[in-house]
Image 1: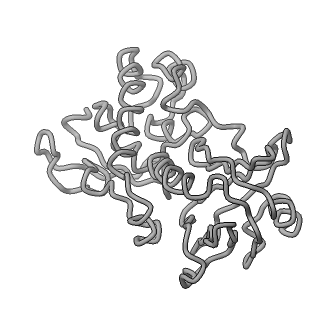
Image 2: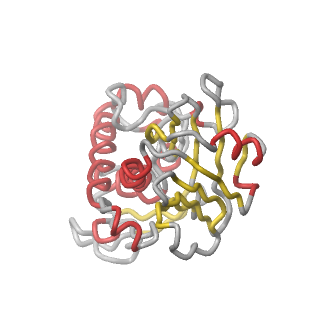
Image 3: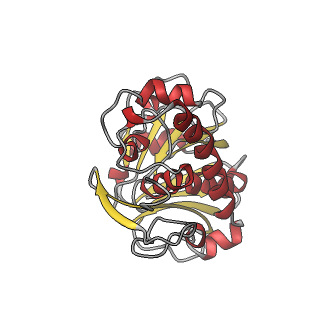
Length: 274
């Protein structure tokens, strides 16, 4: 599943390509990817409107229309957005196509069909997508060690599980939680309630630093993104522990351990993360 860095890169690639363009027609091959409202109403409401821009919130994308209406999208496991020439062959599992006023198309494909769209009218309260339940963004000035300690400091759960709680921190998933804890030198199985003030402060510093690092490493051009069909995530050479269980630690050389925490695979160094 794409996490905050990948979603931010998608936002930066797609936004300049659609900003100011009108939607001339929408084809919904799989209406069920539209969670709210009904597909016919969604398509009718958006047809003729112009895109004003895109925001990211956690792992969600918010496509703003000039009218003030907004489309909220969660890509989930395998969702993909592409801006393509109209005559390009559609990718398999393309479910939603926005015909744009410059002749190109904004296409949504999703192999597993878990991704969802929600349309909210101007001023309409979002009680559908779950975006209102998200916690702080890692780049928010209010994201501090004190904030983390107040929200997580009494929990008995493993800190790895706590980092995945989107109601506390928006955007972190399995990959980057491993990378964050390795950089912060904190064992993923540590109970959150055992972390010290210094460790909470360290996490509050490491989290935005790692997110910014991987945003930069995933950076791509619209041409490269289209050629790779939106699937060329470039983080792999820079991951220090995730996916490297059984290999030497890049810092101390000790063999990296793999464990399952909260049903999720986790990799850590038993020396650097005592």
